[in-house]
Amino acid sequence: MWWDLTSLRLPLLAALIFVVPSIAQGNYPNLKNTTNQLIALWLLCAIVGNLSSGCGEIGSAMTTQMITVIVALLITDRIVNTETRLFWIIATTALSLGFHSSTAGFTALTAGGASLYGTGGIGGSFSGGNAFAMGTSITIFLLIFTFQLSTHRDLIYIPKIASSRLALLGSQVVFFIMIVSSIFLVISMFSRGSAIAMFLGLFLLFLLQKNKFKKSIVAFIVAFIAMPFIPIPEGYEDRIASAFESDEGEMEDSAASRPHFWRTASRMVEENPLGVGLFCYNSYYNEFDDTGGQWGENRSVHSSHFQILSETGYLGLFLWVMLHIVSFSKLWIIRKKALIGMPDPKLSNFYFSLSNSLLCSQVAFLFAGSFYAVALNDVTWVCFIIASCAYSTQKNAIEKKDKEAELKGAQES
Image 1 (cartoon, rainbow, N blue to C red):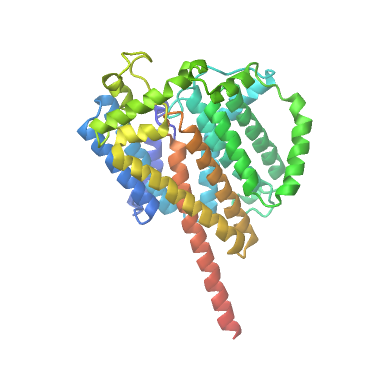
Image 2: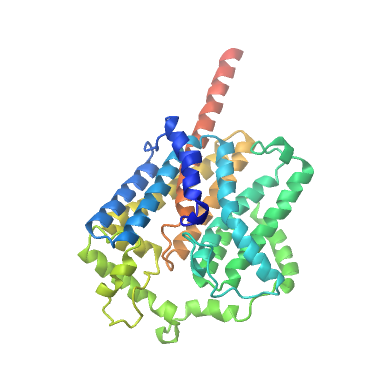
């Protein structure tokens, strides 16, 4: 998934193993639902922006990468049509990034609260510390979903060999360690926006749960016992507090400069209504910078939302906003139906947990994405597709149960 890990030729392998056989079997990109139509239209805006303005080889290469990702995702939407396939694409997405985040976080945790501030990411769309922390803050909720399902012994989504009591207990321990370590990674990287977004998402996840009073008591007891043993990196409190400074003169350059980068994006799109092309903001920055280079040259826009505005234009931003609205609406409908419209408790639990996790993941991205230019990260677009797949599979499951009930009623009468 992670774009530029080309040394292992993973994108080529994915095409050979997944895309080519799928198309050969007639599984073409699915454009029959609103989410996919919005994604396809947005990609068209990105291509037009690149053709009308663009920034040479860099923009063309990144546009090609995005076309590859979206084609794969649109095919994914067509073939992920059961709860089992849905579960495994979520688990694979969570584990593929969770492996890196939990390994780094566990190392920092066992080192007595070591700071990872200034370290790089894992490459691809998560190059750089802030991007890695942000990717972790939105993926952690997929890990939580996978952990929640592993606590139920009536799983129908995993092979029988892995559903024994010992295997489930082992997986629960592993997932719990991965979640705690990933949370600590975000803390240890001193990424303020990602940390606030992650805790905002965790708080929302708590609010969305059933039996909140009982769970709040358990969470309070666990937190009270664990707090003295959690090694917070030195200076972390001051780092987080600096995000809320109201006096611009007291803010760090990284925080004080962001409004300027956002204004620059607005000026950029005023002259280029179709956008300047994917990943081309940095190349155009010097041309539209009105400070004489006060904040340096070829700077990032430092916002996923202004990145979309400047690189895909006004229409691209509109489609981006609509994509989030449609995705949130589908997830809320999934959650509502899971609570009141699904007689099967297994499926009800599955869709309830899934919708809660994806809602929190997208909320975390919307907040953290306001401060980092990572709109084109793989996980966010995968989550759009997962929400679309979940909406369809839940609808099919309910219709199937209704037909079975009608048939049974007809036979009895």
